[in-house]
Length: 355
Image (cartoon, rainbow, N blue to C red; front, side, top):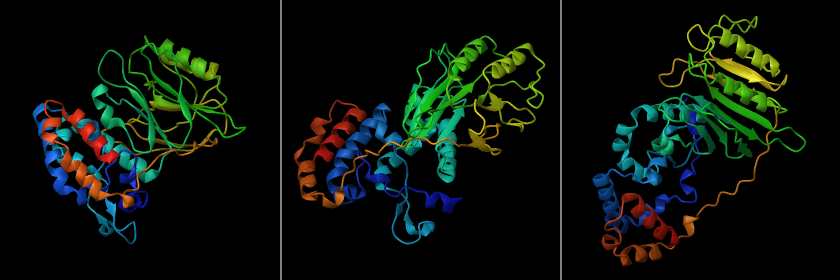
């Protein structure tokens, strides 16, 4: 597992547009120490942690040699040292979300998934920083008006996609249209969560299903909590479950999961509207403390890949003398006085990158 993660590791991660390259921190340590200590102090005193520090990842630096050998890496990227200093504070406030998210990112890196759907995310606005995943577009629908649950979709940056604006009526369903290649149909990907014993919202889910099932290619996954449905014979014990079966049939959908996904119950479903759209369906494995099985599948359609427009800064050509002059000429104690850690960090980074 470790060798696979290292093989797929993006060793150029610290080169992205708004990052500070390792060489900058190494060359200018005597200039930057005073300024950063002011911002750290503001963060300690106010509890405000700049967004960049939260989004950063501790990424090993590849020195040379075989990528799969852990001995060929330095322990962390200096791009993330800023975040590392505050790590214990951040983790103490996000112990549940953090561990689950870290495991999700590790699995995604190892398996190299293009699309990831999750249910029961339990995210709030305060989790914006921890939800992001490098290299992926994030679409999310948090539970409206109360804590808990929620759904999310991660789609690789290279795919062209658009979230559908469907009146949600507090329904925990999310729909993203992924553009197909030339002369290929777009692929509608959805994720839904239906809480147990909540029948009031089911009609709204059916309404959305009827709308999106008109797509030429539809793939829907989610936790629908209908344990009494027998998918082998398309029968159900409860009236609401029978109505769900009728909705599936009326919209010409096919359910492909045949194994239990939570203990002996089949709760997590995979629905498609076209034969041959999906293959290699596998059930097995857990994420964090979840008692639901992971469902893997391959979408056999062809998605359009957008051209990458990520700009990078070439610090090999940097004038560190100019950096040093800038750092020493600004009265940082005065400039940063009375402003928060986020504002102070943003100003500092802007001035540093302008140089």
